[in-house]
Length: 94
Image (cartoon, rainbow, N blue to C red; front, side, top):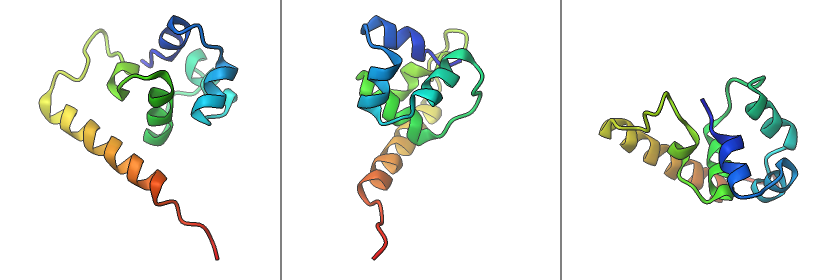
């Protein structure tokens, strides 16, 4: 379960405001919050977490279990690093 609405409203932020800051379409944010969008990319999760000032694993709540497995935590950190590198090295056509 994604805690997006909870974290967004704690910061008194609208979906529109989060969309502007994260550069994630408002329709995606709405879909995640309503449960209509069940799957999203790591990049989208990273953008939303960064815009909210939280770690990616804070967005994900699985019955109160927050990445307690150290191996899983390591993988999450590595995915975040790769997402950051991918954003920084975005290739533009000549």
